[in-house]
Amino acid sequence: MFHIYSTEKIFTTERIDILNKKAEENIETRGYDPESQVPSDLSNPKWFLPINVITSPYCPTWRYDYLKYKGVRLKKTWESYQGKIIDELFEDLHRICYHYLKETKLGNLDLPKEIYSKIDNYLEEKKNKALKLEFIKNPNKKVLNSFFTKVKELAIYEATWFSSIINYSISNNLDINIEAEFLQLFPFNFKYKVHAEALGFSGSPEIDFIYKNNIIGEVKSLSWHDLFNLTLAAYALVYEEYKNENVNLGIVLCPLFDRNRRVPIYNRKTEFEIISEDWRKAVIQLRNKKIESIKKGEGPPIPADKHYCSGCGYNYYCLGGDEISK
Image (cartoon, rainbow, N blue to C red; front, side):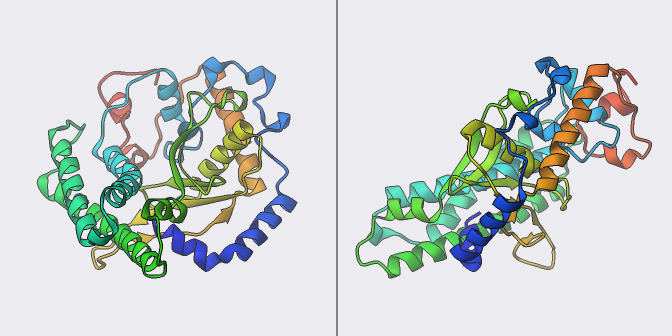
């Protein structure tokens, strides 16, 4: 997250302007256009699904979508909880760092030592909470410790970026308002809620983060999947409809881990990308197909290849236990 600042510097304002100009020339589908709204024959809100379900790449038969629509309660899985931890981490790091700067006098700042200490306390609380939770299959101690070791590596990596950038800024300004400097250097809005019924999405979609008020950001905790770009496009359409202004660029944070490295790997180098016309059209087509499927009221079959079911919170219903419209 904090290293996005460096990404922007590498891109330069000129390059970002070039991307925006290219996007304006090539994007025709915008969220505020009537053509983007859900067709009248599919416009019953009872059939709508959340964005994360519409763009989910995980269940090839869309059975997951159907069970979600039916209101079947997801069982808590260790896999989904890991994703939740990664997703929350970036917002929590931003908060931890901001409050430390806000509450500490400039002359007493001890970066990164104090931030590392706060991260240790934060992760210990998360770990203790995980130990008390019940999952479909509880992780053993070794698996749990291994995961939180990786999360700590990710947190330290980001905190090191934060400390370096803040210290550099302090060293180059004789007169500095450190709180204002933080907000200018790291202008993130997290968990930004919008309304999207006009576009056929249920609930109040929550964008992982918005950078500088016009770049959509998503956090993913699994290996890269091209459908992650569809999530960016869906949120861009929703944000455009909500704000009635164009959103051209997005960024996906997809940290992976290698036991031979002490730092995370940001798969598919973290860069600003144009949220393309193709992605936008693909989202609208997928939305229409999935709403049409819900409208028909037919429960999709269980995937023939059961590896798709590993880590799914509906595994219990589909492969054993309660039967839900097989």
